[in-house]
Length: 247
Ligand code: NAP
Image 1 (cartoon, protein in one colour):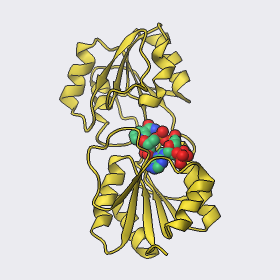
Image 2: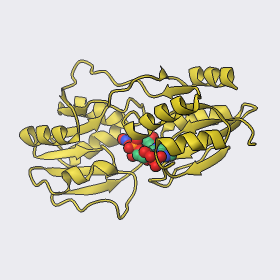
Image 3: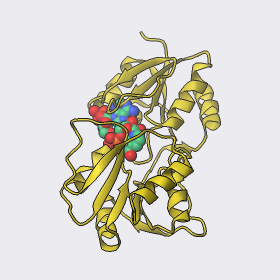
């Protein structure tokens, strides 16, 4: 029987911050990644990579690995794994905590246009802009690939065969954190007239929002997926206290 462990569902800088904090505690912890991109760094703990195979398989994994508590520290828009974590933890009767960045709030000078999803954001952008900066993640690029209504400047972390060719636009490759001065130059140099973004909530990716505000550009902000059921916190410190209370 494996020693009881805390499972951290990761893939975000907040999750890495949590992993660093938990690695200093006297407990077994496992960090889990989807494995879509090469991680910049890995925490000093057991790391597993790749999907579990759905909610039922995740519940089996939790039992097999003697998981005592799960922290879902995945991105706010990673709705699939979060739903699976809720179902699996309910099934295996294991406590679950959701750690995610609090959403950004519009401030004076921001011109945010709400969109329910990627397709709506794309269509709203096409109504108002000709050159659009998109940073919604590689899995969303298919929504833009064949659309000639705008020129799409799409930023993703790394090259890969999974990226569709953009019929009108180009990719740039970069990993955050990003800097306000650089974001300003990027938007200016490419003559961008609108930005499409998820409301990630992270300081690392906020500078594009601040740069858009400075340049008086509209930001088409995609709504977060609805989240239900699990206890939720926004800080590593609160999560560490929770983890300690469950170990
Ligand atoms: P998703 O749609 O919720 O996940 C799709 C599938 O990938 C899940 O059902 C699961 O496969 C597997 N998976 C996702 N996260 C996993 C994890 N941490 N460990 C093990 N398996 C995982 O998620 P996504 O939007 O594709 O995001 C994938 C990963 O990238 C997440 O870990 C997320 O934190 C990170 N990320 C996402 C975004 C974003 O905008 N969505 C941005 C930054 C980082 P099985 O069903 O086979 O278990």
